[in-house]
Image 1 (cartoon, rainbow, N blue to C red):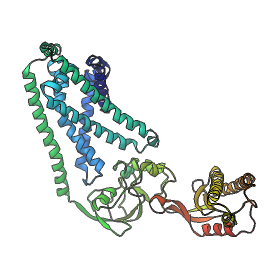
Image 2 (cartoon, rainbow, N blue to C red; image 1 turned 180 degrees about the vertical axis):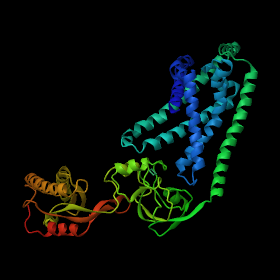
Image 3 (cartoon, helix red, strand yellow; image 1 turned 90 degrees about the vertical axis):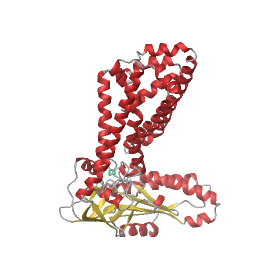
Image 4 (cartoon, helix red, strand yellow; image 1 turned 45 degrees about the horizontal axis):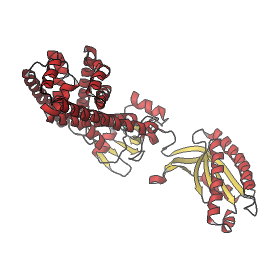
Length: 493
Ligand code: FES
């Protein structure tokens, strides 16, 4: 459907050159859709799309949705109403009376015979394009490559409808010019094999039937949804308990995500509950026996991809059958990229890793005799050099504390590799410090000296902090021991 819309709009854009150019381009952009196979594919896709949207609406336990989902649904449901007359007059005209529509005919209607239809087409363009753009954005934003391409796709999302509108306006003015010749319109109607006003009457009648029928179906879907909730009971009597202590009654058959929405618990859901983004993941703290089904295929794929432990589930895919206690693991405003990048977010986990503390000996004294600018320059040079050594070895810089550095090794690669990485990093840091001392020998009374403490052992690793100061870090005795070694050891490089 989106391909059809893009073809249609690109075809309009050719009217910027001339109506003849737009008519010629129809062979490429429109004829694939007006042959029997193309018409069948397009009609099938449209009906499937509408049916799925209505079915999803019917099966929803809660209509509390993010604003983008509401916007997309509302825009999508209004498209058939805006489109129907145009579709019946052109596509329907081809099938019903062998009409051969062209740009002269359409633009004469929109700019002269029935200008309100022209405005309706403009509204349709905005509505359909916005609906498609929202859908595609939310479909693609869970893909790792999307952020790099996003700006280009945004550009296309603006350029295509703008070019189509410019073509529509340019073509409209061309038609108004041609209409100054009273015979021109008669020739156009003859060329398209216009059957007469009774064709328009039929089209209007069909449009009215369709609008009444469609509105009735949409209304019935919403009513049926309400009836289903009423008949089967809205609440199941079981509850989800959140870390804040809030207990929310789980609507019958609802997922944990729907329960959170029902209870106004902030809960991330970038993909809107389609099991694609993993941002809704929760830690199951406790559950009654038999209350959670094992992960289905969609959920399993995401959990395995991110190597999440068994007690982490996707809230949008789990429909509890008994009381549970759970904790949403990601902040409500997390992006899909952050959620899907291994190591970006971690719930607390005990791990055996190597922790390194590096401290510049006596740097406070050196700093006192230097200008602030020189101190910052020197430290940044030092941090950059040591940072490269740590990251090249496979470590993760945890934080810079004054002139000290804390780094973790083995968070991704495990205990043994972590220990080796820490030692490799320490050797490389000493080599790099010698180079820095060489470069700064004219600025320093004595060379910089570095104390490095490394200790391996159990720590709690997890994403901690608040707002922009949130990061993966480690806490525990191992960290304290490494810190003491780093700051106090007598020998230094
Ligand atoms: S909301 Fe995206 S996976 Fe659950």
